[in-house]
Length: 183
Image (cartoon, helix red, strand yellow):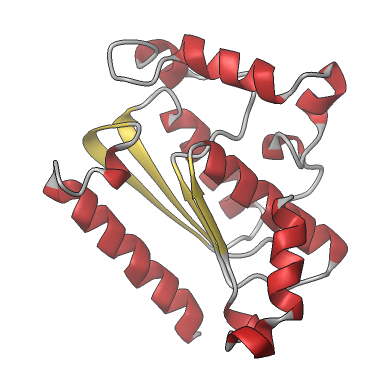
């Protein structure tokens, strides 16, 4: 479990040479979902005060009733149909769809979460998912930095050998994380 791994790291921070005040979570796509959920649980339990959460085209809302799921639903790699299948495989019980640790959009409260960096791609069915989550975090007082990369598709962040925009996005993320850690 991701949260248990985070606690394992926290408990061994001295051994690992890690400053416990500078631990954050990050993930892309489904990993962005997990990182957002871990940030929620860290805040809810008070077990660790995360320095940041970095979410790259995260999937936050299993209902996917947003415009980009229609407009970018096919023809750009990741499809809305496959995302709905992934959600159904992940959330096997109806109650899971409302569990904020599985579907972070369902949290009752977003205040007090770790500062967030959210990156999205213009031609991604998840574009609005990331954008909407950024707006929710901002409206709840969470320091949130949001970037949408024009012309990009889901998965571009890991394509540094294909597009220089991936390198730019990676550097931007590193710079923003370092800014959070410097505070």
